[in-house]
Length: 496
Figure 1 (cartoon, rainbow, N blue to C red):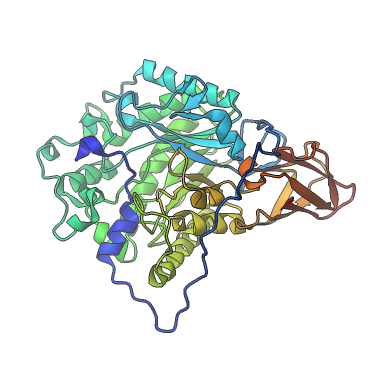
Figure 2 (spheres, helix red, strand yellow; figure 1 turned 90 degrees about the horizontal axis):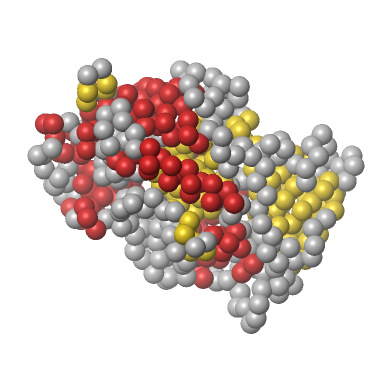
């Protein structure tokens, strides 16, 4: 039911559940993931709103993103992807998708993954809709005014969102029915239909769509135009080339353990698109996704060696997703022990594989989707892992969720560190946060932690070892300066 697709495809988790036989090892003890909630608020929040200070543009420095002051930046926020006309969320009356943008900042967020619809951006092979492009630029500027970084996400699901010209003529009338036995998955199973497989095979092969243009070549014209128009927007953290690309015909082998032939093609196509960006925006970060059945199920074999370097080297980062339980559904309730064991393993594998791939590139990784559930579990484990591994994240999708979910999203984190972040732990049940970093005394700008108002209804106390807090009491942005000569700074935040 293509016209009713309001929810996000969960292809990796859904297909793996259907195609892999999983078992629970006897004697395994499920991890403890209790359901907790935000504290009750009897009156106005004691935390004082403080806007984000965007010191852009962000650049890639090894495995980190750094701002114009040289501080390591952590991004935390939400997706905003409009899948119906006009295929773009705009800021209207101070709201994005109906949610006040100042509420996003109040929750501690500093970033938005803004969906850009390829079919709207590039309606003809080699052509660009400049009016749509200007609307994208206007939204980016409005989000900058609101104090939010923006990741430009070229978004598709089951090839829906891709331009019609990207579908080969011999695929137009092919069946959209999934492979036999996979109907139980739901509409995500349509990735395995004859039509979808043909579409993706043609994309990876860069089959011709116009004289002198393959499908990826023509797609690259749109990507290049987007980069050129937004290259001077100081709050743009880069372009994500393509959301959740599917492997096509070899998808079974991809689930079963890996499909290097698809990884090689994905590397070639991503390299070509990245070089199109480099030609007009030499320093803009570009974010790659591996085929959508990685990284939760295999370690992709991809390399950035062919990317034309800019002043910051390849300036390529890895975008990855992590889903497991009750996506596009669910409610607040305990998760069965066997599901906890399976999902915790899946989430760990996603982070580990993404970490290994990004390390091989000497590049940052970015959890650009997780959540999408009425059950807290899809936010519980990824939120904890992201803290432990100091990974930026963007939750799917913009909106307000049950307090048992929001408690995992509205968490304290260092959004700009004047030095090297070393340790971050946040307890959703108590709001207690510990953050440790090694200061860089050559930087003039301070370290800034973001705190969500709901997490501290009566305010907070901040204890700093090796430095001092310079912001006002109960400020929504906690500012810390290291003591001269300090080799380590530890910040502890607790509820009053």
